[in-house]
Amino acid sequence: MSVARAATVIAAITVALPTAALAQPLGKIVVTPYVGVFAPNNELAKSSQTDGAVASRIEQRNALALGATGAYWFAPRASMEVGALYAWSDVRSKFVLNQPGTSETFYEARNAGVFLGAAKLMLGLFPASSDFQLRLGFGPALIAHVGSAYNGGADGTITGRTNIGGAVSLCTKVPIASRMALRLRVEDYMYQSRLRWKDMSNPADNFKFDKRFQHDFVLSTGLQIGLIR
Image: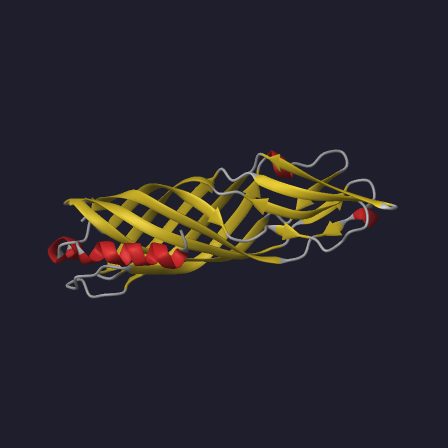
């Protein structure tokens, strides 16, 4: 599902929700555990270098994601939110081995994961009395790639696995009780990937992959719980 289509679905759901239910805040402090799908749209790393054995492409896989957010509502249509999630996203690498007169290509899949954290300002796009409720969020984000796929050995290690970027989200809720609601959300974590190979024995063999601007999408649903009125 594309982000545009996901946003359209969220907007359509809000049309059918009762205005009075939408207008009721869950509380000053709201926590939301959630489950979602992690869907990266670009290669994490790519190399134009072809001499010797190099990883010419590294890409993350779609995966299950679990996370939680906490929000403080300081105005009827505005809140500050912090949250984090973990996605069990394995990586798939394409290697090219060049020898005089021959070229061999092979693939390798290894266990990995992605940790994403963000602090966002959430703003209601419509008045509380409106038939629609959509909230737009934006703010800085931290993205870290972890797991055995990135673990170093005697020969070397991969560096540049932690990045600072930005996060944007669009969400709505389906009220189910006075202090509970079902949240629907689509998010985009944006950052510049800068993976490098650091050779432990010979610094001359250190290698930089081409920089890649990455979009990591997360489509999720969670249970909002209001703690304090």
